[in-house]
Image (cartoon, rainbow, N blue to C red; front, side, top):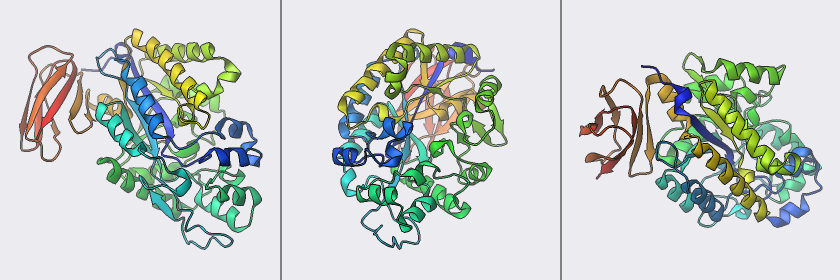
Length: 422
């Protein structure tokens, strides 16, 4: 039984940079660094006020998502592609910056100027409500060797940003954490550590990876596969290809795209309210909505990309505007009957016609598009004593049983919330 993606009307909300300690930690750094070279570029003018999310940023974005229910009756899931570590500036000392490798603080520990009281608690609450789904973006987002080299050589913009606990400088902006110009052993080490930290933070391994700045090569994919990550985001935006627009168009029409164990999500649809001054609010919403519908017509999920700076900014009105525009876009998609998935669900549905996504600690959302009542099996969390169908969007004769830590479910086509008893 093959899944009909045209009828499903799937949307994946991918959002990069959560957990990233860049660009500016606070308003003082925002003002002082405004005339630095990297901050004066087109990208810099957009991103200069981008900052680590606060507890209120996460709370308000979660509340916005909870205003809506998709065609399956469940709220949109925000796939927060997360950076899991930051430089430990207390150990990265001028003038020699003597560390053999970049000293790091792992989330939820943060550098002094990046402290965000209550932020991590709000992330946990949003995960429990089912609207926040972390995936892996990288270890620290920084081309490590390029940055340390610039600091040691005394490059003025690198040193100046470092004084304000920001890594942003021209050397960093010209590369990326997994850029091929970075040493292979450094990239491999950072990727492996990022997977380990992510798994420790969120209690599960990452289901997909979006390499920072879309800069990576075949070696990075091989290292990710070795680490157990085989689903990749941003394939259509990958840096370094000739004729990028033609390549994106071809990939849109060729999806699903896979190579061995590797699976590539469709090219992204950019939804960036921070660009609204240039293209207009209504024009952006109209264009994004139209492109989402075109994805459905091509029988593929619509992957909408919306970076953190639209919802976590030192100028609070920008964050409010981003949430408002997101609300307008979600309303249109919900009226169309959109169903909101994450990468892991897309991959599972493609591979086997059913998927499982945890909803905090309380249960799991099961989507079934296979032969009615054919048994499926999946693991329950450790310590689970019972499994109960709490909500469903399918016929009433479905059932689940728990035996030896394994759930056996006989379901009809639809969506089901399985609740755990402990």
